[in-house]
Image (cartoon, rainbow, N blue to C red; front, side, top):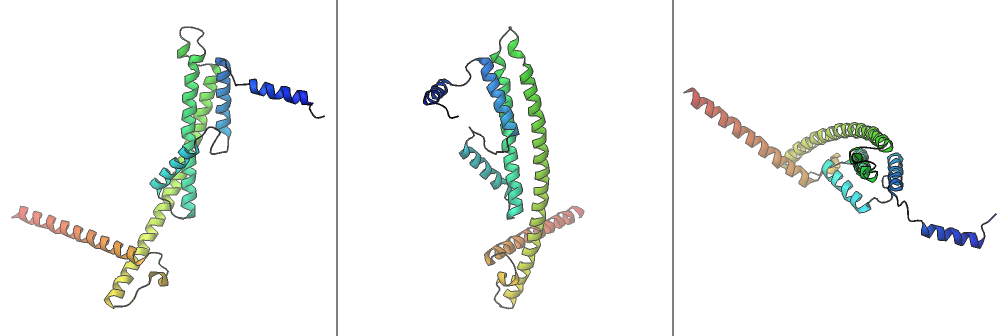
Length: 218
């Protein structure tokens, strides 16, 4: 049976009068309910989260990790949202600790925690431990995958540089894409110059060291 117009109007009036918990105990319960929801929610962003702050946070994570390829990007995304949830966990803990002042039943109340607060902090600690394990496992996977990719790219770049040098010595055109290389000619030339400079610096350091040893032995 549908509600009467009078009942609908009464419900609206009651909703307008409801402004949330007003007493310290009510505010504490509301905070703990938010905590439980935040810990168990599968959503990355919860009501009240700042979307712009999250986007900035994620971009900074990606800029630091420098993922390439779909798999690296997925792992980087998992790292970002896990750290975001860890930060939320710590913010909740600060919120719970801040509610200690809401129950001043005796002069020492500010130094004590209620049973609900103790239970909430225990859940926070458990949840934070799980998140830390997820973060460390994912970071290990990401670093291993990234190291393999960097090593593979370095080998391919060295091969491309050798082909470029051979082509230049024979005055032949060289198109990296024709041979399956994913690097541009400019990238290969830049890598080759860097490689040659490093080798020259290493040789100069070795010669200088040999001269110092020779001078010391005279």
